[in-house]
Image 1 (cartoon, rainbow, N blue to C red):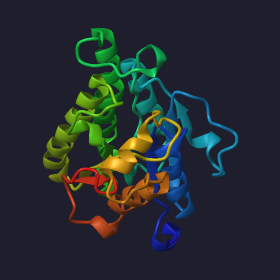
Image 2: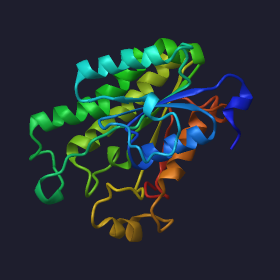
Image 3: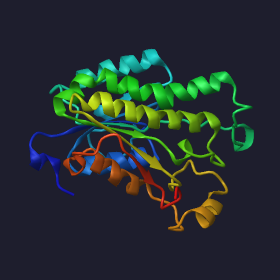
Amino acid sequence: MPNSSNLGPRRTMLLTGASRGIGHATVIRFSSAGWRVLTCSRHPFPEECPWGAGPEDHIQVDLADHADTTRAISDIRERLEGGELHALVNNAAISPKAEGGARLGSIDTDIETWSHVFRVNFFAPIMMARGLIEELTAAKGSVVNVTSIAGSRVHPFAGAAYATSKAALASLTREMASDFGRIGVRVNSIAPGEIDTSILSPGTEKIVDQQIPLRRLGTPDEVAKIIYVLCTEASSYVNGAEIHINGGQHV
């Protein structure tokens, strides 16, 4: 992987939802390539994380709170001394469960839960992109929204609020690609399937056996590699795409 510091000024990426799984792998992928990585999550910076500047470039924020999100955006802008943001990866998401981890369907999901999920999964990405539009434009940057296979089909584990928020985010990606593309900022999305992270539900092995042609789970780094491509010149004419990363589960 080429070190971006050899390609001119150091590039900067902002990632929401950095504390585990795909987000964690994405931070490692970009930082190992020489990028400065700013991270956002509900949690304080985890001391066991492997990138050196992490604590100084971590912003603790509740993305379900519009006011706190706005506060965090101001904080991020202050940290971008050069005024450029080369990549924004909207990865943070929540998927509430019923008691015992059961799936919450459209009938038994209360309105406050719907609202909470959409604030994190849908509104935070557009708030981040609009709040940092000047810095993205200055860098001719790239936005990657993390959607889900659950956004295009009823999933046995992902709840109705999560699934519909991801479907809305896929639609938002198209709208953003049209609007932001006119100012030189590309916007794409990735739709992971069953990835081997801590949030997998019991029973996932049946999906692997019956629905995934590659007959295995994906790894967080396999997702992170595609995010990296979408934020570099390798994808310079890709805009408005949704890339399925699911071993063929969607076919």
